[in-house]
Structure formats: C-alpha cells, structure tokens
Image (cartoon, rainbow, N blue to C red; front, side, top):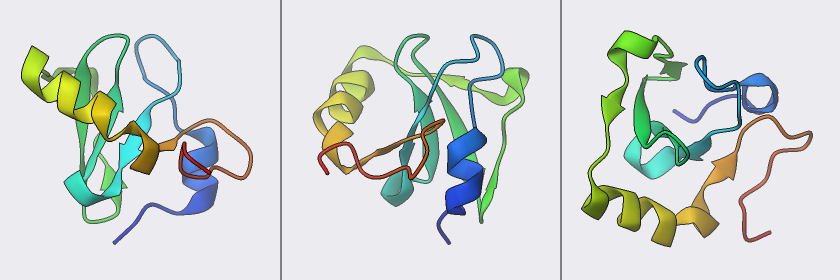
Length: 83
C-alpha cells in the first residue's frame, strides 16, 4: 500500500532533516546523502535512526539509477522525479 500524499509532503530524514526518495516498489525511503534506507512496513514508514540500514555502493547505484521512478519527500504535490 503506497504512502499517503500528505505524508510524502512532510516526511524528512530524522537525522539530517533533508528530503528522502520514496521507492514504492522496494518499500523503502532512501537518503542518498547519508546512504541509509528506512523500511516502509505496510503503509507505515519506520523512521527511527537506529532502524535505518546502511546501503552499500551497488544498492546505492541501483537506487540512483531508478531515481526517476521515486518520489521525493518534502515537496508540495510530490510527484515522481521524472514528471
């Protein structure tokens, strides 16, 4: 189940307070600056810093390559990057 549009508008990384990339197909929120991923369980993002997992170089490159399909959080009318 996708995250609600209003939630996408207000979500930010709990550590650096910057925007995240929401990859609905992978059920995760990704911070490319810190290279950490937060799990989305059902339609609930798990945004605890201790629950974030480090992303290795290969996964980072794959997430960057699929950035056009991701939604950036913290934006009014959040839409996929390529829109």
